[in-house]
Image (cartoon, rainbow, N blue to C red; front, top):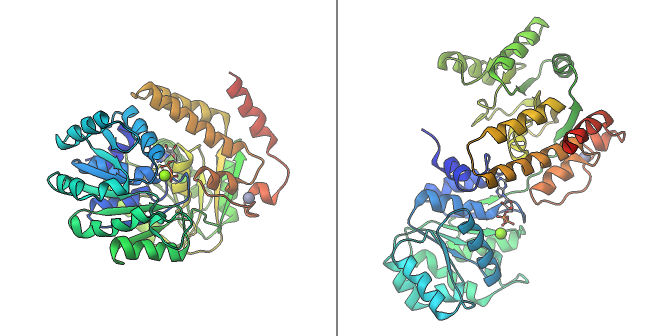
Length: 414
Ligand code: ADP
Ligand code: MG
Ligand code: ZN
């Protein structure tokens, strides 16, 4: 059976992959736990409550400090076909009444409301009769007296956990400092909360991209430079994982294949060998990796372009969990871009989803082609500002990868 949160992510929002943190936060909320999510601006905090809201059904209340923010979010959700409403001071009485009718009739999935309105006795009483499944407090740093954006109305929100004792609450903020975090956790959750702080950087993973020429030779050279270490090699097709693994074996490397077309027994045997032995190279499709937590994976090598920067980040994150020097290396070729464009075009999805998927592919290509620090591009995409890292091929070697660049430009022009 398919994961319901992934279904929602794909069908409603048109995304194939969760961004860092979104998955874990969603999971925790679905399990009924409170969450404090600290993630940089642009990281995708909204989806951290919108996806669980839609999986849970019933009504989700979203508290947000600014009317303009609420209007934007509601408009975006409606475009995606989600029944969202807001009740706020900028709407006339009739509009607020109409919104409330929809909420009371159980038609609304997400209701955006300002804290001072939510915490009135009348509103709370009316809400108590409805099927509330989740409460999200956005821009939760507004509750902290010590911060510059303190809002008195937010203080009242500390009563929520007692008023709705069975409803999971998520607080979201981009303000990462310790004092603010402790303040939020104390006021909203009396300290009993699962806190997720997300800086996305994995500084021990060296990032590199190389123009694809003879991928077998390029892979073998890379693997031999890391002889004796465990590594993961990602290939686009099942057939290719087997070919590559056989090629490595023939050249004296202990390599195993893994893909969804193999028997369950064979997959488990290979996964076991990879997990328990050291120095095994796993040549796999993306079917391999979910929940793989092996600390000493020295590298992740992509022989083909991944699906998105989100997917790439997730996949390379399997390297270097022990904090030791690790490497993420990708081969990048013209044919891969064509292939990925075809995948998107062939999909049975709304035109708007496809347009955005092409946009995300462009971003990934931008990462491959850049002469700038790759970590800056990667983290920047997730909303995290960064200095040049000194641990990517571009930082380490100032000569740009001219071949790949010229090649790919032609595709864009076509
Ligand atoms: P934040 O509130 O953390 O600043 P938003 O929730 O406004 O960030 O999201 C920032 C941008 O990231 C939005 O354009 C959103 O569509 C995009 N985004 C969020 N999650 C994903 C995802 N899983 N895949 C691709 N794009 C995403
Ligand atoms: Mg936000
Ligand atoms: Zn760099």
